[in-house]
Structures are given as structure tokens and as C-alpha cells.
Length: 196
Image (cartoon, rainbow, N blue to C red; front, side, top):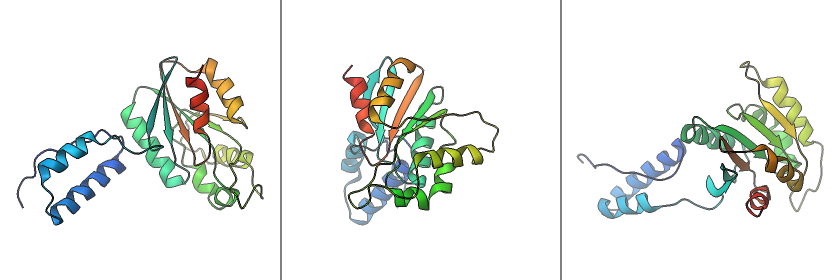
């Protein structure tokens, strides 16, 4: 097969480029017309809760992402930094399940290195576990221990959606990108800001 021509996507991040390349390879195998595929890839807006731009508040760009595993967190942050290299990246993270948080505590602790500011909410439990053996404050302690690159990161524990919205409404502006991360209801912070 010769030159395929140019393809473009609207989505942020190298992981989305890899996904698009996999789609192109599958389309070639299935004999899907590449011109048709090219149009669909260019038009594809992405899926809900995956680097979904929610809107702006006081000039700050608000993004919702379902990342709740260290690998996803790193990929999402890398995409945000690449897309907005001159912006202050603020992550509002809501850990999802006590079991996952406890098991991956050290991995989570190194996942947020590219964020300029990190706000951690209380852990969002699942239907089968409402509490258990770890707290969001444990994650913050671990992050502070493992920051080794000399970077000064602003890290905060703010337990609830309402309290985070109250904090952000006066703190963010046009130089900020706020990424709400987690599989729980962290996106409600963005909704509250957009409703102001």
C-alpha cells in the first residue's frame, strides 16, 4: 500500500492519535473507503467525559475527564499540557473506590507531576464499599513524599464538590485550564461554576 494521505482529528493527546491510527489500520483491513473514514475522523468530537470541554468560567477552560487510574491520569495530563502549554493546569481529582486508591496509592502519587495545582476531594466509594482503610489525605501525603523533580506544586485537600466550587469561583481566570478527573461526580464542580 502506498501513501495514504493526511488524516486529522480534533481530539487532544497522543493516546487519541494512537487510537485513530488503529482505526485507520482496521479500516484498511476491512476495505473501508479512506476518504469516507478521513471525513468521519475529522468530524469526530470524542466521547462524553473524555477530555470533554465543558465551557469557560471567568475565562478559565473547564474540562471533564473520567480518568480514575494512574495511567489515564498521566495520559490526560500530558494531553492537557500539550494542548495548553502556556496555561496553568489545575486538576481537581476525585479518587474512585477505596480499594483502587489503596492498591495504587504510590502510582497515583506520581501521576499528577504535570499539574500546576492539584485539588483532591474525598474518595468516591462504590455501591459495594462506602469506606475503607484509606483516605484522600493519605494520597496527598504520598504525593508530597514522592515529588522529586524540585517542582513546587500547589496541593490541596478539599473534601466536597460544593467546597471545591466555592474555592474555584474566586481563584480561577483566563490563564487557567481546570481538569475535573474521576469516575464519580467530580464533573458537578464544573456544572456548578457554569451555573453561576
